Image (cartoon, rainbow, N blue to C red; front, side, top):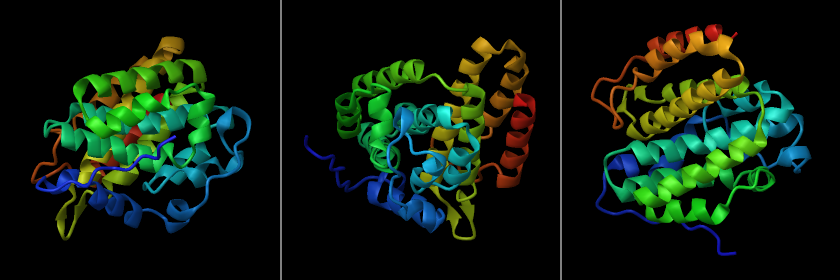
Amino acid sequence: MTSFRPKLWTGVSAAIVLSASLTACGDKADNKVANAPAPAVGEGGEGGAEGGAAAGGEAGAQAAYISVPADSRVALRLAHLKGFFLIAQKQTEGADAAAALAGQGMLEVFDVQPGAFKSAGVDEAVLRKAAQSGSAADLKAALAAIDAAQAKAGGDQAAVAKGMLSIATGLYKGVISPDGVDPTEYQHSLGAVLAAQQALDAAVKTKPALSSAKGEMAALVHMWPATEAPKAPTPAAQVDGQAARVELALS
């Protein structure tokens, strides 16, 4: 099988330069998480208690993977990857931008623990194609493949939603700094919160009592006012506060 080699972008905005986004996520995460080897694949394709150690280089990922039940880690990993493909599909800067975002997800989530995706029956070729082309049709096919895998993996979708909130808020902490706004972290965090919203929607289907959390989740998603970072994003403290309200509603 040919290994995935992300494109080298030239003449595009900083928000879509793949190498820059690797640095943005990796440097801001705990080095123990970013550099940890993937654990041995166990039941369901995930390592046991160390499932979080293979979470990739994203802020908030370690806490997310440790917090979910072991039998929901594959479900969380699918949602984690899905966030990158959702923002790739939603962004408005074109196919190159989409390919960079999807490619980032493959590097940070899929390649860290491919056994989890294999256990869920994900068609890797479909994902790789989307990460190379960034075309609308390929992204749609990739998301359909992830949806099918999520249906197979099962898991506690409420716990997955909470895990994705941890990833989203962890990433968002890197959006605003004294140096300005980080457009890469903004988009990655938006993808994560969109995946959290979809996990909540799935949870409500089996646990209608959680429907009260949907309004709080919608309010959280609205704190990302556009798919590309604005000049003045929502302050991180406000995002954290609203995420806490979602978690309370999920409890």
